[in-house]
Length: 403
Image (tube, rainbow, N blue to C red; front, side, top):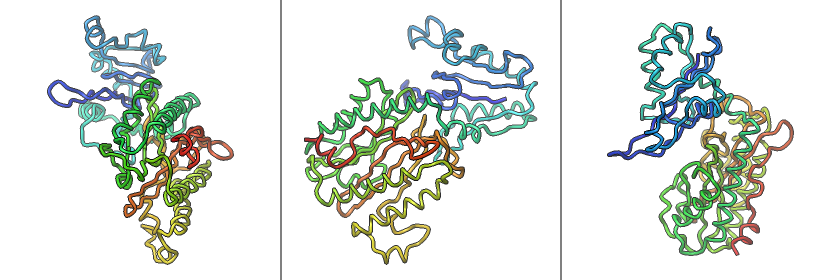
């Protein structure tokens, strides 16, 4: 038997809360996008109606007036295809019966390679209480299964990611017409969210980065509160979320509307690395090996730009190659329901996986940081499909639209 919980609504202070964001696993498995929900999957259950069960927060007219309508049995079935629906108040009683039938229980701990969770989640509280009450059961991990399931996208998922990418494209085109010297980074952010909202996005897929000048050399700069100066480059790492699916785009544009020759050289170097790196995303590729190859591509470009020398490469520390001084982050990550989506990085890439490709060059002494990023679907054969192929990317395209 496997059990999955929704997220909490997290408090801020007083009676304030953060907007609800559903746990991606229960959403992926059921389509339920509502707090205080529990999904149980039990294919070996002796009762047919117990093979799939949803527990939901009980709704009534009072809740509908104050909070809006919640799922009832009929709408829950329409959403999930699950026929057996109980109110959450019946969970303990039904769970006791289920546990007498089950010998092993799959629990859903967060095992993402980037996870750093200090807050106790609803899922974690449930697991702790379950293991205390039923200590004799065997407990297994859902994550390895989910990581493999979620990393390979269904065609319907790819269509939703494409929709998110298309909305992101509209945001960029709006911004290219808007940017000029002395606009503030937060004004650019506002232009994106305006375009995202009128196109039915559910907001930014992640905290947006709008970083001008030296700020672009700070990889996780999110203050977005500085004025964009003539002659600087603005690095924008933004993406729309649509139906809970993410997009992830980076573009670097000149405040003045025209790149200097040096900026153009660095930009085109990054673009060449991105184009070549994307072609390496084929079935069977190992993520770690892929990054070694991208490192070789970047090393060649940095030498040509005069940022490192052949001697630097010859004497480099293999654990921190010479190119890392100017390109210190990874090139690709899984993307889907989460911007940094599920995927077991030690296993070969497969068709249907969606990866970003996002090389960058960061030169603090020149107040210059450039990153270019698109989202790709790995194909059975040939090069990956670029979900952002229609988004302006070349120097000529960007300068032309900014005129």
